[in-house]
Amino acid sequence: LLYRADLPAGHALLLSARSPVGPVVVSPAAQEALAAFARPRPLAGDIPRRLAELGLLIPAGEARPAPCPAPEGDTLTVWLHITSACHLRCAYCYAPHQGRAMDPATGLSALEMAFRTAARHGFRALKLKYAGGEPTLNLPLVRLLHGQAGRLAQRYGLQLRETLLTNGIALDRVLDFAATAGLRLAVSLDPSRRVHDSRRTFPDGSGTFERICRNLERALERGVRPFLSITLCGEEGEEDAEAVALALELDLPFHLNFVRPADGRISPEQIERLIAAVRAAFARIEASPPRRSLLGILDRADFSRPHRYPCAAGRAYLVVDGQGRLSPCQMELAHPAGDLSLEDPLPVLGAAFPNPAVEERAGCVSCPWREACAGGCPWLARMSAGRATAPSPYCPAYRALYPELLRLEGLRLLAQAGT
Image (cartoon, one colour):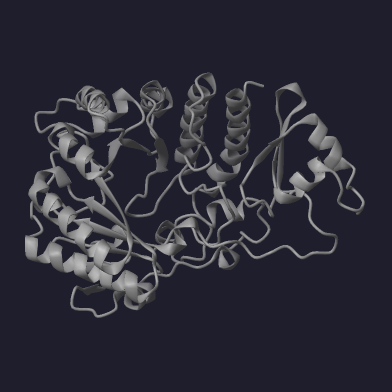
């Protein structure tokens, strides 16, 4: 057992290294049944058998299995940066703003490469992310690529998932298309109105939070439910957690991302402010629990199943810029490792981007959370400490917040069950 959190009415949340379903909320009766196996005994009865199915009871003497691969193990993820133009100039943005758009020939060649690579390596699904800059500024190309991607998916027999990553300023331009095409929308938002309007301004200096809120409401009116990507930088004002409150009010899925600074520097003060901001978000969630699981909402956390790698970069992930140059990670756009002429880009990109398994990361072997974060972002570790095997600079935040996240999920499950 990796973790236990007491919950109301005698319930408890348990996290086992053997669980195929992640954390489990158990009743008082189930806890009594579990305690009866403090010493090995024959498995008998409905409750003990169910506990065994959940990985909370294991055969005596059986060794602990190796961590499972990440859930994305059957999926190749391809980012297409279809323009470097953008309405905004966010201070933490990693993408170059050169105002160049990907041309149709490059986009179509990138699609052919993506499907060919997925088929060559036995992936069952391809995830396309239309990114920028701001991709709504090159919407005709998104439409063209979407149509061709559907045809290629049929030809290669692959599942296709598509997401458009947008700042939400021109969200209304893409809603009808997204609704008919089944295109997922991911809208970037900062954690509070004050912080958002200081970071994400129009050229005249005016804020954009209110406009994005109106656009999200328009999306819901048209039957489109965007995903909110909320970025935390460890700055004053983020603890207002208005973006989380908005997501809960509109019943939108969301994720709390920790910023990836270009120089990799993260101060202890930033860590403390990040923890405070996440705790404020958790307080909002506890007051109004969502229907959706919380197990994957926090930066690199994934408690749905054990995993060895924090992301697919270097293994099942590639990024294409507007000129057809290839990078192993979007944070490496300035350092391409190849181009569309590569017959098989994955080995080349993998060699250019070290992404060690969690058992190779310094200090992770003895950590009970190692199979939730898998060591954290390897790019950030390399930038902050000079090597990808270093511990994540966000490790103190993960250790502080993971127990609180699990408790919060237990409370959500109890509320959902009406207990």
